[in-house]
Length: 195
Image (cartoon, rainbow, N blue to C red; front, side, top):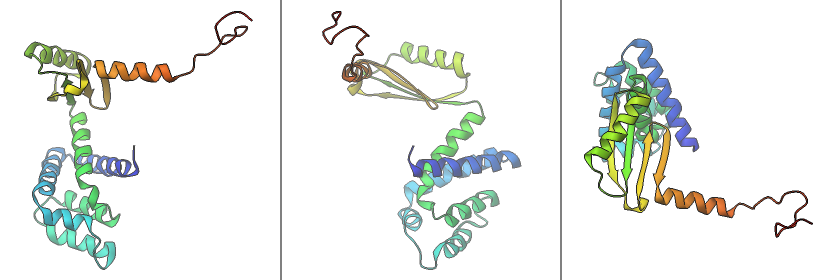
């Protein structure tokens, strides 16, 4: 995990904790989704977040308050001020993704991404859904993708867990294991015969 990913995760956890403490999870989640959409559609907002302003972080914090006071809930405005105070507004897209994952997990909802080598049948998707429901619970957000680079099989991400049942994954694991030196047992020479 990179330093930026750790920062994004820490900010997301702080916001999720504050939202849970105030019992405002639904409101905060909706506003986090709105902030993520704002990032995607507004080049001005992206530019504001990515560039340093004259006057330092104090000025940036005031600008954030001016932009969002009365438009977003106070808990979200204060959160944005904290991110600005640490000069990390450029991490907002990552923070939004991390927050949504934490919020989904808190609701007992698993984020599931299924990648198949070729277009899956409804039965294949249903089998994976049933397995996830049995192991993680019935509530899930599912994304189904097709990735020909897998060659055959599938790769599954459930929250932070990765299950690679693809041919490409098996070949990679085989390649890695073949690079490892084979230990020589005591009393044998390198050809495998007793010394």
